Figure (spheres, one colour):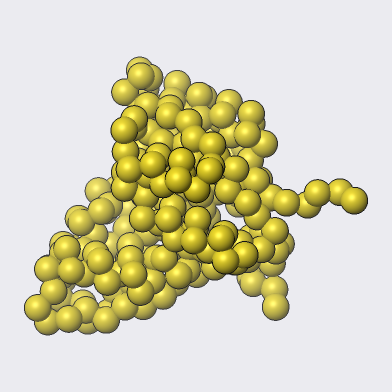
Length: 212
């Protein structure tokens, strides 16, 4: 019988909390026909690599600082994706820019989780705590997280899933970040991966349709 398991490559740059959410979902059998086969970090020594090791998942470090520019770095990443036979690439707190060659090689096969309800607080400069600082400065009452396909437009790809999270009056960027991760990101990222691996996502006119 043919093995229809999809190879999931997870890209990380730091602590790997979203990676852990995916590892936990995999342990519960909740990634559909997908399996995390490799974790690739843009930095050495980050805790996400420990998480991969503890889960028995192969890991690579392809350090951004070792490459002269985005094009050279993207080419190295593309080689790694091909070597790992990637079916799905997940950016889980991956803080490094890749160029459009990756999107073209893997159209609608790369997803990212963003800690806001796109199109709010997204695009260049909106990452990490900056997103939550901007949300609080604007005084929004609801924020959340978005999982979307990656295109050459930063945070501009088709939206797969979103989940709203209430903003509390005494929130700091740190407390809001924690709540968005716990209540939204850690739920919708594994769910989006599962839907992809079950072949339930199609993109029509830049809009994602989810088959029942």
